[in-house]
Length: 357
Image 1 (tube, rainbow, N blue to C red):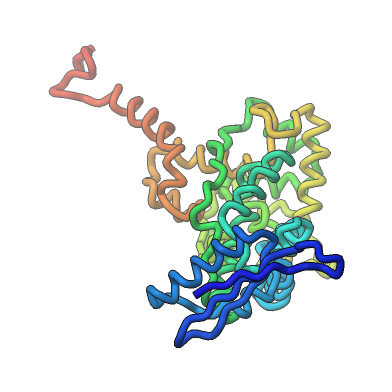
Image 2: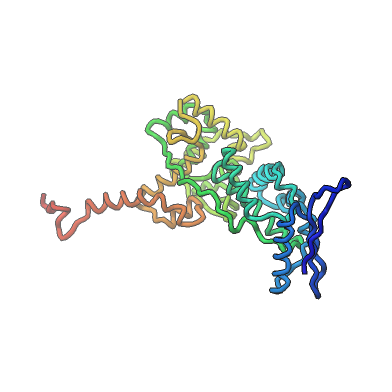
């Protein structure tokens, strides 16, 4: 049975309530709460789990705060991830550590607490995708704490929370003249990099990490041993992609000679921004703005506009995780099919025209 005991300070003022649950065959469970109602709710959960046989000791989860777990996560889990993923986690966790929730014990965190943080992030102007990435690392922390750190009583508070809905994918494509303008606003190295992006649908990180040993000129292909999705893929090179690679300026006397372009993510972003400003292309996230990642959308769209590639071949080139992610491009293929049908013959007649006409 449960008992509740008032906690007072030296002046006799009530500062909390201690809940104590005793049941034969189980260790006594004790925890202090701000109000008696919170203490009673906690005790009811403990007693229910003991009756149903699902009780697990909460000692570790009770005495460890969210912030302490995130610090351990940074030391043990994040370093084992790919560089790009690890860098992202550092910033997300730093944000969590600044929030009051990080002072709460792991066992004390509920879905309602996570929902409040989501509302706070939305009020701060964070995008839906940024919030979902914050929730992903938060959720994984609870999974690791439960499976690897002995906090077996934990339930993941993210599992039942409504996550912000992601907006539709950007549809920005290159406008007539933009490609030439951008190429004229950058040096030869960056121009070759942009051309390769448009011809291969490679992500910025994949291009930046590309080394010459992964380029097979003879077979006209690029091999990426590990991509964003964790899978390897081989990308066939078009004639234009081959020309781009053949024109990359040599850097044999530099430490980064093995790198195809010798540029970092930040260097690419800086060069892109300078070119965008020089050509008058807007910044931001409006429909007219153009981001480097939009080149991947442009490249994928061009692949769909071809009639000699099926969707599985396109997926193999672009490295999209599943076919659902390519669904928004199908209207391009539909338009091509309509054009082909417009010229199809039916019984010697091409939509009202005979062969002799």
